[in-house]
Length: 296
Image (tube, rainbow, N blue to C red; front, side):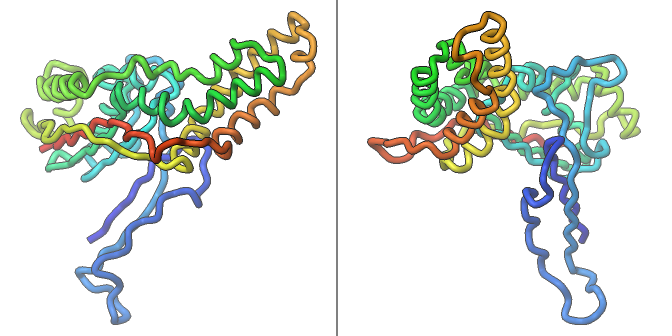
């Protein structure tokens, strides 16, 4: 059996950061030639589409599959912290995209291909902002503003995650996932017509939400901080740049003379390394919705 592992990675990435492939089972044969039952694992990477960039759908290019349509047996999409902006989430359940979820469904093989989709709920996003990020970032920003004379506008721009209040509860996400499957199966949408042409039969490849539940996930500081830094670095750099550009325009004393790159570095290093005293142990788990969609 041949196993192909396709990792979706950001536009700029290090090959060393790719997850380690699972070991081959049952393993290499003892003899010099390959045994019929030997499993071979092949890993590769493809640049993921940046759904947070605010892409505009067009008539000719509204979907962005990472693999050939109908070629994936098992697809796993995981997100445990809120997205940087609403752009990724805005079209998540929209067949006219750009939609991260629809693109992964199109890639599923029609003979029981499965998608495991894990995404933070509204409650989970609020928990992350208030119980994970807030205790680390808020005092850091307050100290930076007091010591350096920055206005509260900079602290607000850096600390606020705009997408948090707009995410959905688990029940609403489940209803929208069901509605999306029904729309894909209905035959009236542009995307379903395309799928029918590829499959050759009108009823092949029905999408079914076979499982939906919510789950609490506890994240260690090192893990969520690394995710947050990689996700938010560009946004923070832009916000800090805008703030200092205004300061220089209006010649706001010492602030205009400071270097914005140092502010960005202080924020990112602070989230990663700042010591935070807690009166209790780990904060409460982050609620995520877990959805399994089968096509077949």
